[in-house]
Length: 95
Figure 1 (tube, rainbow, N blue to C red):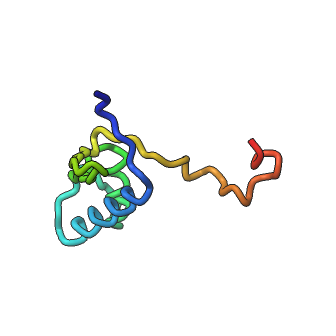
Figure 2: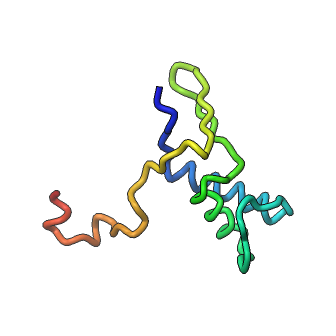
């Protein structure tokens, strides 16, 4: 079975918010934060390095529970640098 599970952008936002809250309440960071003060930026760096100490728990339609470690994840969204569909030229929207 494949051990890499995609996570949605909604799960990512929830994780970053939760971790930023933990950091602002005194939790120790898991990455080097030299020069960083914003808890959300630190949480993003932890996420990108795969060192965020949280798990996603999904309840599947059949009732099974899936626990996803963030060291084994792939973000199921398009890169943030990509323009929204409405801002793309018509020729690119058709493709």
